[in-house]
Length: 357
Image (cartoon, rainbow, N blue to C red; front, side, top):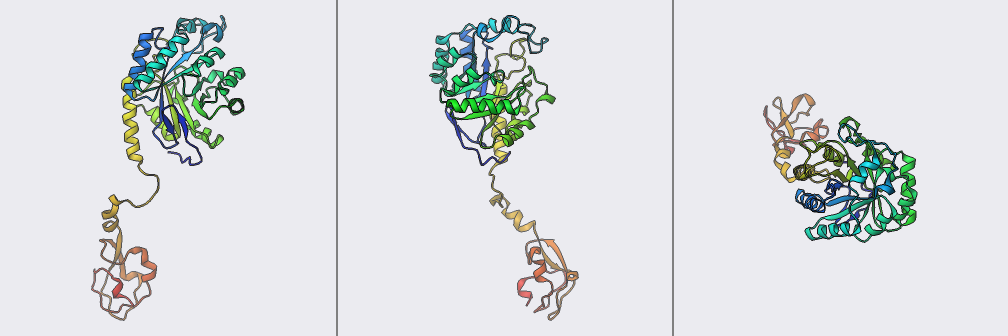
Protein backbone atom coordinates (compact mmCIF):
# COMPACT_ATOMS: atom_id res chain seq x y z
CA UNK A 1 0.00 0.00 0.00
CA UNK A 2 1.29 3.46 -0.93
CA UNK A 3 2.69 5.51 1.94
CA UNK A 4 0.64 8.72 2.07
CA UNK A 5 1.73 10.21 5.36
CA UNK A 6 1.03 13.71 4.02
CA UNK A 7 -2.74 13.13 3.94
CA UNK A 8 -4.92 14.48 6.71
CA UNK A 9 -7.79 12.32 8.03
CA UNK A 10 -11.31 13.14 6.80
CA UNK A 11 -14.56 12.56 8.68
CA UNK A 12 -16.96 10.74 6.37
CA UNK A 13 -20.24 10.05 8.08
CA UNK A 14 -19.67 7.76 11.02
CA UNK A 15 -15.98 7.15 10.35
CA UNK A 16 -12.69 9.01 10.24
CA UNK A 17 -10.85 7.93 7.10
CA UNK A 18 -7.07 7.81 6.81
CA UNK A 19 -4.90 6.48 3.98
CA UNK A 20 -4.09 3.24 5.81
CA UNK A 21 -7.45 2.62 7.46
CA UNK A 22 -10.01 0.07 6.34
CA UNK A 23 -11.56 1.49 3.15
CA UNK A 24 -14.84 3.36 3.38
CA UNK A 25 -17.22 1.35 1.20
CA UNK A 26 -20.19 3.00 -0.52
CA UNK A 27 -22.90 0.65 -1.76
CA UNK A 28 -24.26 2.57 -4.73
CA UNK A 29 -27.90 1.52 -4.83
CA UNK A 30 -28.57 4.27 -7.34
CA UNK A 31 -31.91 3.46 -8.90
CA UNK A 32 -31.67 -0.32 -8.54
CA UNK A 33 -34.72 0.02 -6.26
CA UNK A 34 -36.65 0.44 -9.55
CA UNK A 35 -39.09 2.88 -8.01
CA UNK A 36 -40.06 0.83 -4.94
CA UNK A 37 -39.54 2.40 -1.53
CA UNK A 38 -39.81 -1.04 0.07
CA UNK A 39 -37.10 -2.42 -2.18
CA UNK A 40 -34.95 0.63 -1.48
CA UNK A 41 -35.22 -0.12 2.24
CA UNK A 42 -34.38 -3.78 1.62
CA UNK A 43 -31.28 -2.72 -0.29
CA UNK A 44 -30.20 -0.45 2.55
CA UNK A 45 -30.60 -3.36 4.95
CA UNK A 46 -28.63 -5.69 2.67
CA UNK A 47 -25.87 -3.11 2.31
CA UNK A 48 -25.64 -2.92 6.09
CA UNK A 49 -25.59 -6.72 6.38
CA UNK A 50 -22.82 -6.89 3.78
CA UNK A 51 -20.63 -4.48 5.74
CA UNK A 52 -20.91 -1.34 3.62
CA UNK A 53 -20.32 1.97 5.36
CA UNK A 54 -22.88 3.88 3.30
CA UNK A 55 -25.94 3.20 1.17
CA UNK A 56 -26.18 5.70 -1.68
CA UNK A 57 -28.97 6.71 -4.03
CA UNK A 58 -29.33 9.15 -6.94
CA UNK A 59 -31.65 12.14 -6.64
CA UNK A 60 -32.83 13.62 -9.92
CA UNK A 61 -35.76 14.41 -12.15
CA UNK A 62 -35.33 13.36 -15.76
CA UNK A 63 -36.51 16.74 -17.07
CA UNK A 64 -33.67 18.47 -15.22
CA UNK A 65 -31.06 15.90 -16.20
CA UNK A 66 -31.28 14.91 -19.85
CA UNK A 67 -32.66 16.30 -23.07
CA UNK A 68 -35.38 14.35 -24.86
CA UNK A 69 -32.87 13.59 -27.61
CA UNK A 70 -29.98 12.53 -25.32
CA UNK A 71 -28.44 9.26 -26.60
CA UNK A 72 -27.36 6.40 -24.36
CA UNK A 73 -23.71 6.03 -23.36
CA UNK A 74 -23.97 2.55 -21.84
CA UNK A 75 -23.76 -0.92 -23.41
CA UNK A 76 -27.09 -1.34 -25.18
CA UNK A 77 -26.66 -5.11 -25.09
CA UNK A 78 -26.97 -4.92 -21.31
CA UNK A 79 -29.38 -2.00 -21.03
CA UNK A 80 -31.34 -1.65 -24.28
CA UNK A 81 -32.92 1.74 -23.54
CA UNK A 82 -31.46 4.01 -26.27
CA UNK A 83 -32.35 7.34 -24.66
CA UNK A 84 -30.94 8.84 -21.46
CA UNK A 85 -34.16 10.72 -20.85
CA UNK A 86 -36.24 7.57 -21.26
CA UNK A 87 -33.93 5.60 -18.97
CA UNK A 88 -33.83 8.20 -16.22
CA UNK A 89 -37.56 8.82 -16.43
CA UNK A 90 -38.27 5.23 -15.45
CA UNK A 91 -37.03 5.60 -11.89
CA UNK A 92 -37.25 9.27 -10.88
CA UNK A 93 -40.31 8.61 -8.73
CA UNK A 94 -38.85 9.43 -5.29
CA UNK A 95 -39.36 12.89 -3.81
CA UNK A 96 -37.93 14.81 -0.87
CA UNK A 97 -40.10 12.94 1.64
CA UNK A 98 -39.00 9.56 0.30
CA UNK A 99 -35.32 10.41 0.69
CA UNK A 100 -35.95 11.71 4.20
CA UNK A 101 -37.68 8.41 5.00
CA UNK A 102 -34.75 6.40 3.60
CA UNK A 103 -32.27 8.54 5.53
CA UNK A 104 -34.19 7.97 8.76
CA UNK A 105 -34.23 4.21 8.13
CA UNK A 106 -30.47 4.26 7.45
CA UNK A 107 -29.85 6.02 10.77
CA UNK A 108 -32.07 3.50 12.52
CA UNK A 109 -30.06 0.49 11.34
CA UNK A 110 -26.66 2.21 11.58
CA UNK A 111 -25.46 2.91 8.05
CA UNK A 112 -24.60 6.27 6.50
CA UNK A 113 -27.18 7.59 4.02
CA UNK A 114 -26.06 9.32 0.83
CA UNK A 115 -27.60 10.41 -2.42
CA UNK A 116 -25.95 12.06 -5.40
CA UNK A 117 -27.71 15.31 -6.34
CA UNK A 118 -28.16 16.02 -10.03
CA UNK A 119 -29.85 19.41 -9.73
CA UNK A 120 -29.91 22.38 -7.37
CA UNK A 121 -33.20 21.41 -5.76
CA UNK A 122 -31.75 18.01 -4.86
CA UNK A 123 -28.72 19.70 -3.26
CA UNK A 124 -31.04 21.75 -1.05
CA UNK A 125 -33.19 18.91 0.28
CA UNK A 126 -30.26 16.48 0.64
CA UNK A 127 -28.08 18.89 2.60
CA UNK A 128 -29.74 18.22 6.01
CA UNK A 129 -29.79 14.43 5.60
CA UNK A 130 -26.44 13.58 3.96
CA UNK A 131 -23.22 13.72 6.03
CA UNK A 132 -21.27 14.45 2.85
CA UNK A 133 -21.92 14.84 -0.87
CA UNK A 134 -21.07 12.73 -3.89
CA UNK A 135 -20.53 14.45 -7.23
CA UNK A 136 -20.97 12.27 -10.31
CA UNK A 137 -18.30 12.14 -13.01
CA UNK A 138 -20.59 13.71 -15.60
CA UNK A 139 -21.05 16.80 -13.39
CA UNK A 140 -17.37 17.58 -12.89
CA UNK A 141 -17.82 20.57 -15.23
CA UNK A 142 -21.25 21.58 -13.88
CA UNK A 143 -20.29 24.89 -12.31
CA UNK A 144 -23.67 25.79 -10.72
CA UNK A 145 -24.06 22.35 -9.18
CA UNK A 146 -20.48 22.25 -7.88
CA UNK A 147 -20.92 25.71 -6.36
CA UNK A 148 -24.17 24.71 -4.65
CA UNK A 149 -22.58 21.55 -3.23
CA UNK A 150 -19.58 23.51 -1.98
CA UNK A 151 -21.81 26.06 -0.25
CA UNK A 152 -23.11 23.29 2.00
CA UNK A 153 -19.65 23.23 3.70
CA UNK A 154 -19.49 19.44 3.81
CA UNK A 155 -16.89 16.93 2.60
CA UNK A 156 -17.28 16.01 -1.07
CA UNK A 157 -16.47 12.74 -2.81
CA UNK A 158 -16.00 13.53 -6.51
CA UNK A 159 -15.75 10.99 -9.31
CA UNK A 160 -13.43 11.83 -12.20
CA UNK A 161 -14.54 9.51 -14.99
CA UNK A 162 -13.83 10.77 -18.53
CA UNK A 163 -12.02 13.85 -17.17
CA UNK A 164 -8.53 15.26 -17.40
CA UNK A 165 -6.30 16.98 -14.88
CA UNK A 166 -7.40 20.53 -15.73
CA UNK A 167 -11.08 19.64 -15.28
CA UNK A 168 -10.40 17.97 -11.93
CA UNK A 169 -8.39 20.93 -10.69
CA UNK A 170 -11.10 23.30 -11.86
CA UNK A 171 -13.83 21.37 -10.06
CA UNK A 172 -11.81 21.23 -6.84
CA UNK A 173 -11.22 24.97 -7.03
CA UNK A 174 -14.92 25.73 -7.48
CA UNK A 175 -15.93 23.41 -4.63
CA UNK A 176 -13.36 24.77 -2.22
CA UNK A 177 -13.92 28.43 -3.08
CA UNK A 178 -17.60 27.86 -2.39
CA UNK A 179 -16.79 26.33 1.01
CA UNK A 180 -16.44 22.55 0.64
CA UNK A 181 -14.75 21.10 3.72
CA UNK A 182 -12.68 18.37 2.01
CA UNK A 183 -12.64 17.05 -1.55
CA UNK A 184 -11.84 13.37 -2.07
CA UNK A 185 -10.87 12.60 -5.67
CA UNK A 186 -12.24 9.31 -7.02
CA UNK A 187 -10.66 7.48 -9.93
CA UNK A 188 -13.43 6.24 -12.19
CA UNK A 189 -13.87 4.95 -15.73
CA UNK A 190 -17.14 6.24 -17.15
CA UNK A 191 -18.17 3.09 -18.96
CA UNK A 192 -20.97 0.67 -18.10
CA UNK A 193 -19.78 -2.00 -17.70
CA UNK A 194 -16.06 -1.25 -17.56
CA UNK A 195 -13.84 -3.98 -19.01
CA UNK A 196 -11.13 -5.19 -16.66
CA UNK A 197 -8.42 -4.05 -19.06
CA UNK A 198 -9.98 -0.58 -19.04
CA UNK A 199 -10.04 -0.18 -15.25
CA UNK A 200 -6.57 1.45 -15.22
CA UNK A 201 -6.17 1.21 -11.45
CA UNK A 202 -2.67 2.64 -11.82
CA UNK A 203 -4.42 5.99 -12.20
CA UNK A 204 -5.11 5.86 -8.45
CA UNK A 205 -1.39 6.30 -7.89
CA UNK A 206 -1.23 9.09 -10.44
CA UNK A 207 -4.07 10.96 -8.70
CA UNK A 208 -2.15 10.59 -5.44
CA UNK A 209 0.85 12.18 -7.15
CA UNK A 210 -1.17 14.94 -8.79
CA UNK A 211 -3.14 15.82 -5.67
CA UNK A 212 -0.82 15.43 -2.68
CA UNK A 213 -2.45 15.84 0.68
CA UNK A 214 -5.84 14.55 -0.55
CA UNK A 215 -7.53 11.25 0.04
CA UNK A 216 -8.03 9.32 -3.20
CA UNK A 217 -10.82 6.86 -3.93
CA UNK A 218 -12.17 4.61 -6.66
CA UNK A 219 -15.64 4.19 -8.14
CA UNK A 220 -15.82 0.79 -9.81
CA UNK A 221 -17.92 -0.19 -12.83
CA UNK A 222 -16.32 -3.57 -13.59
CA UNK A 223 -18.27 -6.77 -13.13
CA UNK A 224 -17.62 -8.18 -9.64
CA UNK A 225 -15.17 -11.08 -9.47
CA UNK A 226 -15.57 -13.91 -6.92
CA UNK A 227 -12.64 -12.55 -4.90
CA UNK A 228 -13.61 -8.87 -5.37
CA UNK A 229 -10.04 -8.30 -6.56
CA UNK A 230 -10.68 -4.99 -8.41
CA UNK A 231 -11.72 -3.30 -5.17
CA UNK A 232 -8.91 -4.93 -3.19
CA UNK A 233 -6.37 -3.88 -5.82
CA UNK A 234 -7.68 -0.31 -5.82
CA UNK A 235 -7.42 -0.17 -2.04
CA UNK A 236 -3.85 -1.45 -2.11
CA UNK A 237 -3.06 1.12 -4.81
CA UNK A 238 -4.11 3.84 -2.39
CA UNK A 239 -7.90 4.24 -2.69
CA UNK A 240 -9.25 5.00 0.77
CA UNK A 241 -12.88 5.36 -0.38
CA UNK A 242 -14.47 2.74 -2.61
CA UNK A 243 -17.82 2.87 -4.39
CA UNK A 244 -19.59 0.09 -6.26
CA UNK A 245 -23.12 -0.36 -7.54
CA UNK A 246 -25.25 -2.60 -5.35
CA UNK A 247 -28.16 -4.86 -6.25
CA UNK A 248 -30.42 -7.50 -4.82
CA UNK A 249 -30.01 -9.72 -7.91
CA UNK A 250 -26.97 -9.65 -10.21
CA UNK A 251 -28.69 -11.84 -12.80
CA UNK A 252 -31.17 -9.10 -13.70
CA UNK A 253 -30.59 -7.37 -17.02
CA UNK A 254 -30.66 -3.65 -17.55
CA UNK A 255 -30.21 -0.65 -15.30
CA UNK A 256 -27.13 -1.05 -13.06
CA UNK A 257 -27.68 -4.66 -11.98
CA UNK A 258 -25.25 -6.27 -14.41
CA UNK A 259 -22.10 -4.66 -13.02
CA UNK A 260 -23.20 -4.41 -9.38
CA UNK A 261 -22.17 -6.35 -6.30
CA UNK A 262 -24.70 -8.04 -4.05
CA UNK A 263 -24.71 -8.67 -0.31
CA UNK A 264 -22.53 -11.78 -0.66
CA UNK A 265 -19.96 -9.88 -2.71
CA UNK A 266 -19.98 -7.08 -0.18
CA UNK A 267 -19.50 -9.46 2.72
CA UNK A 268 -16.71 -11.29 0.87
CA UNK A 269 -14.95 -8.01 0.20
CA UNK A 270 -15.03 -7.12 3.88
CA UNK A 271 -13.59 -10.53 4.74
CA UNK A 272 -10.87 -10.03 2.15
CA UNK A 273 -10.08 -6.62 3.63
CA UNK A 274 -9.71 -8.10 7.09
CA UNK A 275 -7.36 -10.76 5.74
CA UNK A 276 -5.31 -8.22 3.79
CA UNK A 277 -5.06 -6.01 6.87
CA UNK A 278 -3.86 -9.04 8.81
CA UNK A 279 -1.21 -9.61 6.14
CA UNK A 280 -0.19 -5.95 6.04
CA UNK A 281 0.33 -5.72 9.80
CA UNK A 282 2.55 -2.90 11.02
CA UNK A 283 4.24 -0.51 8.61
CA UNK A 284 7.49 0.12 10.52
CA UNK A 285 10.20 -2.28 9.38
CA UNK A 286 11.91 -3.98 12.32
CA UNK A 287 12.66 -7.48 13.57
CA UNK A 288 9.57 -8.90 15.26
CA UNK A 289 9.21 -11.05 18.34
CA UNK A 290 7.91 -13.85 16.08
CA UNK A 291 11.30 -13.84 14.33
CA UNK A 292 13.48 -14.06 17.46
CA UNK A 293 14.24 -17.77 17.13
CA UNK A 294 14.93 -17.51 13.41
CA UNK A 295 17.09 -14.46 14.00
CA UNK A 296 19.19 -16.46 16.44
CA UNK A 297 19.49 -19.80 14.63
CA UNK A 298 19.10 -18.96 10.92
CA UNK A 299 21.89 -16.41 10.86
CA UNK A 300 25.48 -17.47 10.30
CA UNK A 301 28.34 -17.40 12.75
CA UNK A 302 32.05 -18.14 12.27
CA UNK A 303 33.47 -21.68 12.43
CA UNK A 304 37.00 -22.88 11.80
CA UNK A 305 37.90 -24.95 8.73
CA UNK A 306 41.21 -26.06 10.33
CA UNK A 307 42.78 -26.07 13.73
CA UNK A 308 44.01 -22.59 14.60
CA UNK A 309 46.89 -22.69 17.07
CA UNK A 310 47.49 -20.15 19.80
CA UNK A 311 49.59 -17.27 18.45
CA UNK A 312 48.43 -17.64 14.83
CA UNK A 313 46.88 -14.74 12.94
CA UNK A 314 43.37 -15.53 11.69
CA UNK A 315 42.88 -15.34 7.89
CA UNK A 316 39.75 -15.59 5.76
CA UNK A 317 40.73 -19.03 4.52
CA UNK A 318 40.63 -20.30 8.13
CA UNK A 319 36.94 -19.59 8.56
CA UNK A 320 33.50 -20.52 7.22
CA UNK A 321 30.17 -18.91 8.01
CA UNK A 322 27.62 -21.50 9.15
CA UNK A 323 24.20 -21.34 10.73
CA UNK A 324 24.17 -22.26 14.35
CA UNK A 325 24.30 -19.08 16.46
CA UNK A 326 27.19 -20.34 18.62
CA UNK A 327 30.14 -18.35 17.29
CA UNK A 328 30.98 -14.77 16.44
CA UNK A 329 28.37 -13.34 14.01
CA UNK A 330 29.57 -13.24 10.41
CA UNK A 331 28.69 -9.54 10.42
CA UNK A 332 31.97 -9.08 12.39
CA UNK A 333 34.03 -10.77 9.65
CA UNK A 334 36.20 -7.75 8.94
CA UNK A 335 36.91 -7.24 12.64
CA UNK A 336 38.03 -10.85 13.11
CA UNK A 337 40.48 -11.07 10.22
CA UNK A 338 44.04 -10.22 11.23
CA UNK A 339 43.53 -10.84 14.93
CA UNK A 340 45.67 -13.33 16.87
CA UNK A 341 44.37 -16.49 18.50
CA UNK A 342 45.10 -16.49 22.24
CA UNK A 343 44.38 -20.21 22.52
CA UNK A 344 44.12 -23.20 20.21
CA UNK A 345 40.75 -23.66 18.50
CA UNK A 346 39.97 -27.07 17.05
CA UNK A 347 38.81 -27.74 13.49
CA UNK A 348 35.06 -27.26 12.82
CA UNK A 349 34.69 -25.36 16.10
CA UNK A 350 32.77 -22.12 16.62
CA UNK A 351 35.11 -19.15 16.89
CA UNK A 352 34.42 -17.20 20.08
CA UNK A 353 35.44 -13.70 21.06
CA UNK A 354 37.50 -15.05 23.94
CA UNK A 355 39.57 -17.06 21.42
CA UNK A 356 41.04 -13.83 20.00
CA UNK A 357 43.32 -11.10 21.27
